[in-house]
Image (cartoon, rainbow, N blue to C red):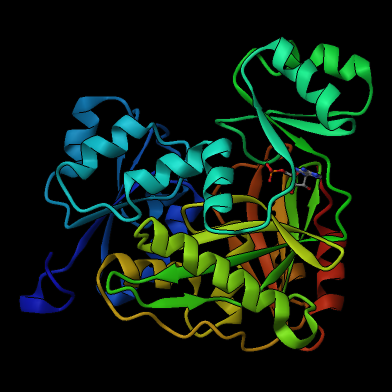
Length: 371
Ligand code: AMP
C-alpha cells in the first residue's frame, strides 16, 4: 500500500456504504492525506459530499469493479453489506476489518459464540430455526424473553419481546419465519459500550466507556465517560475488546455494547465498525474513532483516546433543529448528515463538551423532539 505523503501519492480508501459513518470517516481522513470512494445504492448517500460516490447495488459485479479500481485499502461502514461483496473486494485489495469480522458481526449467534469463546459474560440465549424451537426455548428458559432475527437487525428492528404465551405463539411468523436468537430479557441497570481500535501492528487503543440511552430501540443519548467509580468496568470492557480483536486478528474500530446488571457487564452485541456511541469522540477526544479507524486501516500510528472533558452526544432523530438554536448551547457541536428528515431516521447529532454537558444535553433534547 502507498503511504501517505510518499512521492505525493495519496492513499485511496474504498468504503462499502456511503451513510453518515462513511461521511464522518472521510471528514476525519481527508486531513491525513487520504482520499475516499464509496459504494452505495443511493445517489443521495450522505458521503456523496466528501468523496467519489459509485452508485450501485452491493451485489452488482460491475459496480464492485468500478469501486475496486485503483483502491489502496478497503473498509465498510455498514455491517449488512452482503458477505459475498466484501469477499469479492477483499480478493482484490486489503480489507480492514476482514470479511471474517464482518461475517461475525452480521450474525447475532456468531457474536455471542465469540463472546463466550474469549470469556466475555453473556446472558442466556438459544438459537431458533422453527416455530417449535421458539416454543421449546420459551418453556426451557421461561418468560420474559426477547427474540431477534439473527441477521439484518438494527435500531431495534427485527425484534419482539415475549412476555406472555400469546407472544410466543405469534413470534415465529411475526418476525418473518427467519432464524432467530432468543435471549433472556435482562432487567439491566444501564447500557454501556466500548469503542476500541487495533492497528495493523497489533497496537490497541480503547476509548472511555460510554453510557447509552435508547428510545424505541434507537440510540438517543451517550454520556462519556460513563460513571464508573474506580474505572473497574472500563478496564474490563477494554480487556474484552482487546481479547476479541486479538482472537480474530482485527484491524480498525470495533464497538461492543453491554448491559450492566448488578454491576457486572453482559455483552449484548458487537459492531465491526465505527459506532454511533463513539460519535462524541469527534469533539470529546484529541483523536476521534473515525480518525483512529482511518489511521489503523492506512497503517498509521494510532492517536490518543482519553476524553478531554465530560461529553454528551444527543442523536437528532426524524427532525433537524435550527443550527442557531443548537449552537447557542455552551459547548455544543452540531453534526448534520445531509439527510432528509423522516420519522425514526438519524439525521445528525449534537455533542456537548464541558462541565455543563449534561444540562446542555437536556436543552438540545428539548429542541429536537423525537418523531
Ligand atoms: P440490539 O439491537 O440488540 O442492540 O437491541 C436494541 C435495544 O433493545 C437494546 O439497546 C436494549 O435497550 C434492548 N434489548 C435488546 N436485547 C435485550 C435484552 N436481552 N434484554 C433487555 N433489553 C434488550
